[in-house]
Every structure is written in structure tokens, then in C-alpha cells.
Image 1 (spheres, rainbow, N blue to C red):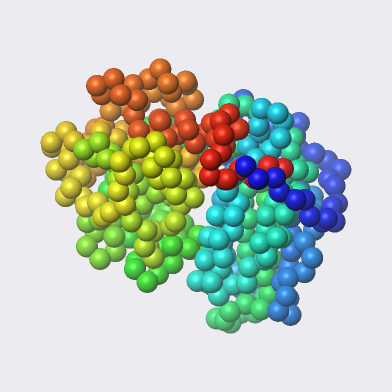
Image 2: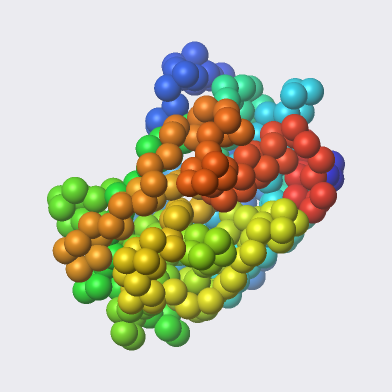
Length: 370
């Protein structure tokens, strides 16, 4: 657990807080924006000094390159309220490293680590009243960089804006999911931008997800772009399975995002003695595991969703059901799956939450306290 140093950043405070319009007991994801945002602009080869201003619309030229050629990257992370009232930003260092990787892939500059982490800390400190005190709540943080040069030409932009906005959030998927294995459409191909957190990856995924929802599913399980037979991600999350009592997740590649929650869960599994493997998972293997009854859990993992259990997987027109789990908002210690064992995803979710909310020690140094 590390305490972050607050940068001396100029602040323009809002005169009209939106706190009064929030229903804290029913937080729809992304519905409300916190009062302030962090800004810094890039021009003439350098980033300007960051500042914090009231949340407001941007003014951009219609010819801004971000609107035409896709130079947009972002991160998604969370801040949590601790029992003593302090605020924890979870794993900002890991998120900064990933932002840097995304920026390199899209030929974009990135702010310094000091501005990223120090600016986040100052912003969260200013808007600390926006961090929910309700169980399972968090302040979702969205750092992003966009190309702002006004020029209708296919080129690397010379101007950029770095910004951080935030939104109080509750659970993204409150119920176990029905997902469909996607065999026709591809989220990302090898050599592409699948490992980068850029806007184009998400836009291209909307249509297949829309078709899946029309068929009665909540999301898709993406397969690889070469054979359409190896699982890559689950919607906007990394995919996990428990097969033969082993936690299995596809290995990272240039078509799979290096999820911070994924990384955290693997570290927690190793510490808890839960067998885990990072290896390819084929659709054929999943079908065989369903026939044998050796697959007992499947779930997606990501910052927004945390852990979302999957209750049904549709494979080539056939639905395969997994054990249905109770609402994760209840006390997980009293719930058990087959043979009286607490499901792996509940064990991992419980430990992760207890660390992030400061209810047990942080042995990894993940928490940055504001």
C-alpha cells in the first residue's frame, strides 16, 4: 500500500456540483460525471502543464484528426473508499504502463508517469465525495488521449489532448451472463491493435454483440482471427474457465488485451494455491469439457465488470449451461458450488475486493492511497 504525492496542479473549482442529482443506491454505469476533469494539451513536441477544471464539453475543430482516423486511446480504472475514509486508486502504475503501450502502437505521445499518477491523485482527492460509500461501489476513472490537430489528411497528428474524467459506478453485470462463441466476426487479428486499448477495437465489436443480443445472449466470446477456434476474450473482458479444477485463461498476445484485473486474479490465484494455466483454449476443448462435465466455471474479468460469471455458453447453435451462481453482492463465504466448494471466481472476487477496499492487507503494493 503506497501513499501518492499530490502534484501542485492549478484548480478551477466548479460552481455547480452535480452530487445532488445522484441516486447512490442505483448507480447505472457511466450515467453521472464527477464535477471536475484533468486536462493537458500537447503541441510543438511537448505536453503543457496539467490543470483541473470543471467538467464541460470540449471545443474541437470538425477536422480534428481523432474524429476521422482513429487516434484515440484510453484506460479504465477505479478508486475505492476505505473504512478510514481515505481513497485508494487501484494499480495506477500498471494502467500507466498499458497506456504507454497503446500510445506507442498508435504513434501518440504519452504524458509523464508523474503527471498521470499525480494528476489522478489530485483529481480524485478533489472529487472524493464522488467515491461511493455503497457496497460494491467505486469511482470509475477514464484517462484518455485524443488527436486534436485540425487537418483532413491521413497523418500522425502533431497535437493531442490528455484528459481524465470520472463517474461513480456500481456493478456492470449484476447477473450471470449468457454468451455466444463468435465464429464469423473477429475482434482483432494478429499483428493488429487487439492488445491496445483504442477506440476502434470497441467500435468494430458493436455489430457482432448486437446480433448476439438479438439472439438472446448478453455478450460474445471472441475467437482468434485465423481459425476461429481458440478463445481470446469475453466481450470487453478477459476470459477464464475452470476445467478439471484448474483455472485456465488464454495467453496474452498482440490480439488480446493485457487486462489489469486478469493480471491481479492470476497473482491472487498463485498466492491462494489455486492451480492456474495461461494456455490456448479451443472451442473443441470446451465442447469436450461440457460433455464430460469437467468444466465447472466460466467468467469474464475486467475493470468495469470485475468478475462476471457466465451461466450459459452458446456453441454453434447449442447452449451449454454452467452452474448458476447467486448475486455476487451477497456474502460469498456462505455460498458453495458443487461438492460444497466455494467457486473459484467467488474466492478470487472476495479477496480482490477486500484488498481494494482496505479490508485486508495488500501484499502486492497495488493500492495507492490518496
